Image (tube, rainbow, N blue to C red; front, side, top):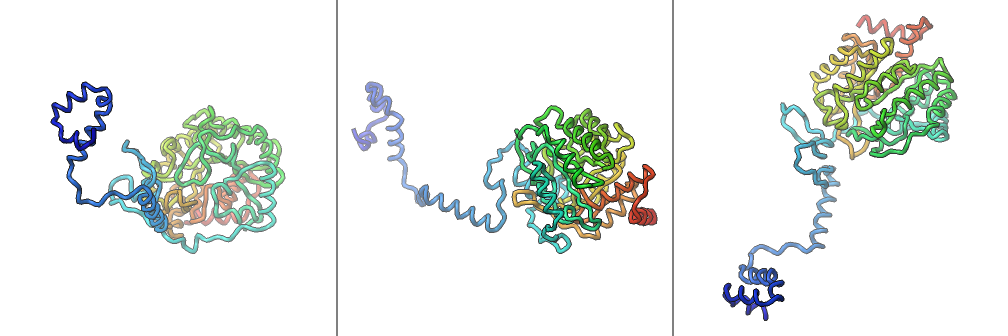
Length: 421
């Protein structure tokens, strides 16, 4: 029985044949499909390309997008329609989250001359790098690709090597859109020897000020706060003269964990809000929150009123002057002492784009504005980072002054200049 014969049969007669024949009954769907095919008129449209032609076309389109640097993850990943921030929106950072402006795609601005730094070299740099590898320690200087690494590790203006140790491994459980630290939902277990190794490395370097930070460890019940506290206590045992600053995460909002670190013997408690409140959902991991960060800073001060509290803001992410002013006001409400403002710099093409390169003059304006608002110290400049050598120098002198110890002449001059301004 061929398809031409089936096409000539009437529908009633065809139905009776199918019912009487098990073979035809099973093949009914195929037969009806064939009948429909023969009854359909020929389309004037060209036939679709073959699979090989289609693959070549898609590859060519992909190459064109990549060559034009316009392709983002949103072009290649199906994000669904659940109303959440898409990958393209997150990485491109649309002009606004308030709806007050028209949204448009950003083109990456050219790097201005004031943001270009020298390649790190020197004996101090090589020695510190060797010590870190030997003790299996990580630094945020390397992981976050800090542009000041050559100055800090090499000695810089004050000829004192500084490095920010990153505790609890180099894999973070969060994925903020500005950060180049590796992300992993299930990072390696904590190294029980890390607190001792960290204290020993710091003792060897002969520092007078050290910064400890860490990846976020949402996989741990306490977020790693006990590990932080243990490291601080060991440093103070081996080198009690060293001032210790800790740049912590939010510990998932656990105020008990914040208190544990604040009361462990450190001198400066730092936690970064990173950006203004309106841009937080676009810049930081969804588990981070502007108000939660304010509560962390507030709790640290409540747990130890003599602690210096500190935070950092990136500029160039699309924020307005009014939003930066609002952030500074909110920080003063919870009695934050020090704030640093620096330029956001895109670590790789997989991260969000720079909205603008803020001028040095604008950074100077925020320095004056912050000091007039009552902050004890404001470090504001294109290359300023949360762990910033000049800032650490200034804060260490504040701590010395509190203890009645001699302070640096440069600190006295800077303090006087700030008062007169």
